[in-house]
Image (cartoon, rainbow, N blue to C red):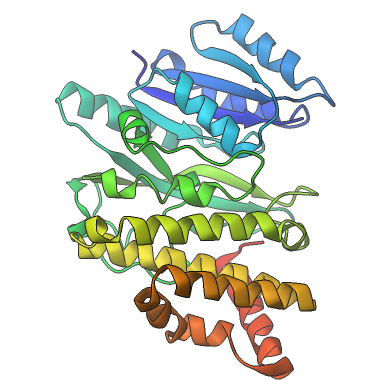
Length: 342
């Protein structure tokens, strides 16, 4: 059995996938690299995947499937993984060698000592095109370092500071036990990927190393603001699925108040992003969709709605009139600069 399975979702990724895969090959025989060709047709993605498998048959496995979107590719990776642990690395991103080897060493030692770890967290770097200074998303003031800990040991997460797909490695069994199945043909499902497994995570380990390089700046990238507005239906779909999950599992999650607070805060930031994008667009249709989103939350759980709607973020997202919408957009711009998203 491999120590770590790494799924690399690829869709017409010929121009950049090799940089990603080459950075992962450094892990050697401890690693299984699952190149998931998600129905690529416009370039040589499929052939490149097969070439890597032929050259590194004990490390690389090429998986070819009909196009189903990023979530579908992640699902295929989980289904085919043979490693004890599982990681997703998108084909336009890459990892840093020194941090990568440190993570593998840590996981190897835990397995050797018989420790069962559910989730490992490390830092990631926003590698934004055109910016000299790269923002590092770290957790050193939030999570205990170099030790196994539980949710109760975590400090308070700041707004906009969350455990994202780039920073997490799950135990493969956790992903299968929680039954996660990401929606097909839907962007932004990474929010579900780092949300639904959390109630099953009983212990965590944080390594303060800058492992994942998250590239931002490719034309047409899903996190580009104009692209997000054009795909707002998919953002809203994910947002509502997160509402459903928290409400449906509320009683169980509330047994761990620190975990519930974290999941509440994460949902709040997603509500903020959705509301801000709809306000930024400003069309009558999108403004009505924003109202519908908050009505949906109210219909699912009135208490949750009142708490979120009357909180600082909820109040800010629902300022009345054209002037209020302008303030909301400007506040969103400030958050973009601080947190380096979009």
